[in-house]
Amino acid sequence: MSYFPEIPVVQFEGASSDNPFAFRHYNANEKVGNKTMAEHLRFAAAYWHVMRNGLSDPFGAPTALMPWDDHTESLQNALNRVPVFFEFLEKTTIPYYCFHDRDISPEGATLSETHKNLDRVVSAFEAQQKQTGKKLLWGTACLFAHPRYAQGAGTSPSANVYAYAASQVKHALEATHRLGGEGYVFWGGREGYATLLNTNMKRELDNLATLLHLAVDHAKKIGFTGQFYIEPKPREPSTHQYDSDSAACLNFLREYDLLSHFKLNLETNHATLAGHSMEHEMEVAIAANALGSVDANRGDTLLGWDTDQFPSDLYLTTNIMLRILKMGGFTTGGLNFDAKRRRESHEPADLFHAHIGGMDAFAYGLKAAHRIIQSGKIDQFVAHRYASFDSGIGAKIATRTTSLDELDHYAQEIPAPTLESGRQELLENIFNAQIFG
Ligand code: XUL
Ligand code: CO
Image (tube, rainbow, N blue to C red; front, top):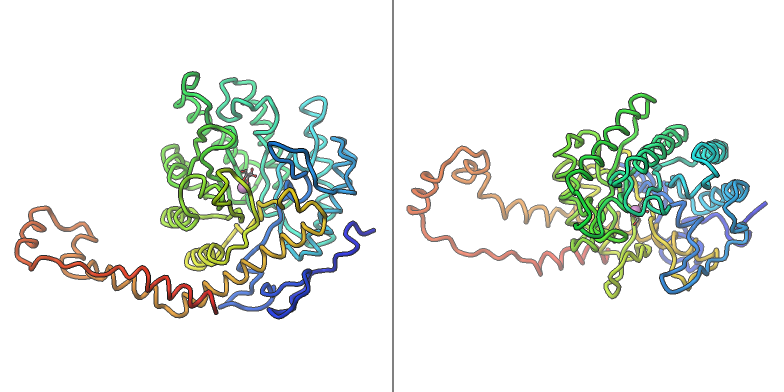
């Protein structure tokens, strides 16, 4: 039984191919440097977008055609979706996937029935993983969609709601562990506030940190050794989310003694909503040795919300891969397509066009980033730009072995410094030359 009978298993055909169901740049086993493209890129598909996103927007109903789905919240419907998803993974050749507990299984009449539903669907995933060799990159709990979490989950003003959230985290973590997940994500969709008038911020942050500590303790108890991540986002749905950007997350993790247990899962459109570039967010995380994984998508400069578009911009993919290569590559993380088709691209075939495009754009970005590093020109320029800190008075500054008195004396003895060009335009030309290939 095939759910996508018209779609072949997507193969690499090279840049001159005009087959819309072929890769032009992503060649899984081709080596770039010392690793294959598949090893560098570690692509994952997001269950919530591929299987559950009807493509509605704030002004209109869902449009996505899902002939395999009866649109009920039944356990049977949840089970029916599983083989569809794995056929999708096989045909796109995407090796990993990510899910929220509530994407894959419905709520029951009671909390324990809800957990039973999850267990049942996880068994179906387990069987499909065995059959196909596909793997779980990370799992997470949906602590933002149900009305009970309207005022937060780990930051709810109600201890009972908090306990519900904790129960969900426990079971989502156990499901992730059962499926051999390499990571577990916390995205604080409602972990923020709508108004400070009703909010005790310190109390909410303390409670949120406790939830993360409890998850770390539980992971130890059950033997889950995957990586924990926080995914920053500044707003939407909350007016303000506590995990607003890389710097805010790192500060929170340090303050609550969690930095040794967590890394960041950075999403491009969240970075831009925070008023940063993805490159900036990555550099902040890498400097703290805390870049873990990437939710690969992009926003739209004309729209101020989280459009979750597929990453087709080669400058963006090159910039992302440049940082991934420089940090020595992913370990537990990967490139998860947290991206959805436009509402107008509602046919199942569009799911394939979207992922093929994203995979090719990242393969191209990987090759361009590798060329940029190989040419060494930008790295040499940057090294030279800071070379005055490698010796003499600069080295004393770098090692913090000087004083204001010494610098004062030194500065008065030297000729006045002159301005050296930052050569931004030259560097942009060098970057472009490698993108052109
Ligand atoms: C929401 C978002 C989430 C997280 C997982 O903007 O990115 O889907 O990736 O909860
Ligand atoms: Co995301």
